[in-house]
Image (cartoon, rainbow, N blue to C red; front, side):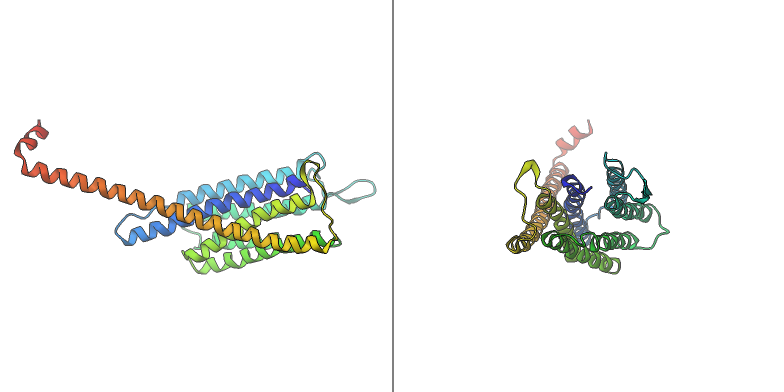
Length: 278
């Protein structure tokens, strides 16, 4: 959809998944550390399957929204008199969602079966991101300067995400790499929102001059601010998860110490032992 809602929808998709991944990867790292210290590691397979199902659901909503909005193509690619292409921008967006749907299906298959190779989920996510970037590469040709520039910065986040996903296929459970991918997902999400607010100002706001070089300079600086915000959110979520598990372990340790002291006290007090038996 070439409007504000058409940018908010994919932006919200990336923001929600970026926030979730920031929590998931933080828990994975902390649980691996806990395992080394003698604690039980969490099993994330069911979580990954649910995540894949949610991804499939979101992308189906995106495809249906692109196709069946009132001015959408309604699954017609070539029709009319004279014969012509129908809403190719909607079809491009639908194609983008299709590959993320395939990525979600790969998540489900990878973590619900032992037959799939390790890293298939990250590989298919990288493919989906590559297709997204490939489509956007030719999405804004012959448009005003600011329109092309603001989409070109989105491409930087997309192709950086492609690179990180393909590296994750071979380098597993690297916290820095995982959190880098999280920050790029958040950057994509917030930048989609920014594009929508620039090109389609809501509530009748003043329109941007798409040929003003000063606006291009400001948007470039704004992109850096968005990434700073993405890094801050990623760091804060990791810190909060770390603090939660630290307090959780401390409370469990205190409970364990209390139970052990009680057992020792009962062992040295026959009257207490008799009362327990009664």
